[in-house]
Length: 470
Image 1: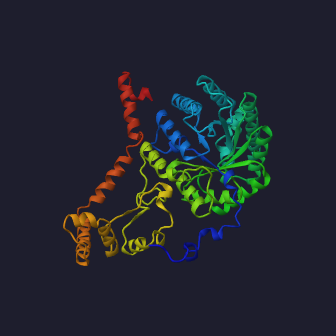
Image 2 (image 1 turned 135 degrees about the vertical axis):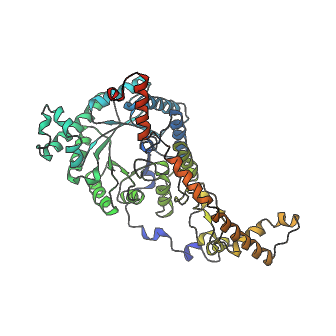
């Protein structure tokens, strides 16, 4: 039915409370997808080069602006992906404005390998952005990079623990700036500076030092991550505001993990104080609890903050997310916002009665806007309103079969629905289905037992003992 009053008069919109936020203009916000790199780092997930090209084409059509192709130094599979994607872009199968990005540690050797791979695959340094990164937190700088920094400076590793943190900070900053300068000397024109792996646990003053060193060395933008997913929105506001203040004319990438289910709100918070490039993955896949999900971020920007990204195909979000789910082997939870199978499904009698009057009574998201499909599920919580609605929708079919829709029939159908659903529950079909799903999930990737069995087999094949093999 049609509402007599304007919807906006009947329901206060969420945008009434967001006018004082400092989001960049929609045309300045860029979506940076790392499904092909960080998404593939989810345990048990691996994409073939052809699957990555399929995903790249889907992401291009979707409207993402930056595509992370990962580390060329990893091996031949990454080389093939790089070749397929760059050739596809040249051939017009990907958008001409889609930025392609590859990654490297802040080491000359890694940069050399990256350049060699580009040359061997026929990709020019002007066709890609090179992302060079280093550590930011003192924990990472001293205890992860420490021995390497000592070797680079011809210092005995025995001094590792005794050297003060400040020495490691200075050495790390020099290494980072030198790596960017080296990449520039080799012809890389576009360099993104990842100045702070584990940045969310780093001293903001040191992050700013790294950022200044990177920009002076020739980087075009900065990337700031919450590598271990410990950011709160309050901390995001603190760090991001400082970086925006110190680098007002520099694009800022934010890359947040989802260990506490805060990646989406943390990304929104960063954008709301001026960051303009958001890193996401399809379905939120990635290491541990994953990354900021593309679907959640894009829906929230559009529906809650009134920010529509130009030329973005919101209606393709579910299709793209389902593709990543199928190829990765990771199913989406049914209640996953925006893209889950249950988010546009309704069973409760109270809810379905409201939906029949106007869907916005219980659902503010229009399903077709995000590629979804509304459906009704019938069970123990169903009511007469939805049964009547469905039977009347199919009244022609029923009448052709000699069936007349009456109150009595509606009541009988509803009673039988509840009875059937109870019978299904007693058969424990749901429990068996879920057990089967978990069992299959554990088969993704190669387990510890598989590794041990592989070692035994290789030892036998070579005619040597397991002890000798190890």
